[in-house]
Structures are given as structure tokens and as C-alpha cells.
Length: 106
Image 1 (cartoon, rainbow, N blue to C red):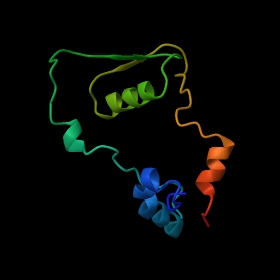
Image 2 (tube, one colour):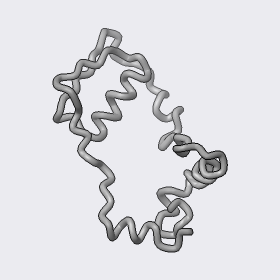
Image 3 (cartoon, rainbow, N blue to C red):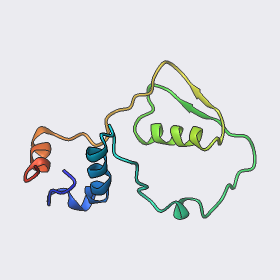
Image 4 (cartoon, one colour):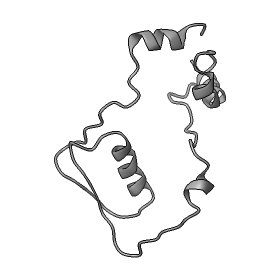
């Protein structure tokens, strides 16, 4: 899919990682930063006090990513209300979009 002309602008950065995964038997490709980390970390922390993130079944997509980054970077605790977040399916591809994306792939 990453080599297809239909997807090249969005997925080409993963081509090498996907090819490596196939060659080595890895289950997943390697993660790639979508934004230069220097751009994300050039401001520093402004609020000096303690912070907490709250997530519940109404937390979707970017909220899930935010909560994961909050924990991964040890910024503060995550309080969850209920058993899961909504994880509402960003980047939903229709069957026709998937067929188009797979066109001309081997």
C-alpha cells in the first residue's frame, strides 16, 4: 500500500519499515514520528503544578493518543472512569477506498 501511487504522499515514509518487517518476519512496522520531536518539545512545560488526565467511554481518537503520551512521558496519573475509552475509529476506510489504495500493489 505504501508504494501505490494512490497512497504515496501519505504512506511512503513507511515503505522501508514495511519492507524490513516483511524481510525479518516482524509483526509490525516501526513507528515513525509524524512531527519532528524538536517542534513538539521546543516550548517546555508552562504550568508547574501537578496535573492529571481523566478518560472515559466518551474519550475518542486524539484523546486516546493524548492519554497514552501523558502516561508514556510520565507527566502525571491517568484516571479512568469505566472500563474502556470510546476509541471511535478515526481513519475509517471504506471498502472502495481500500480497493483504491491496494490497486497496483503486489
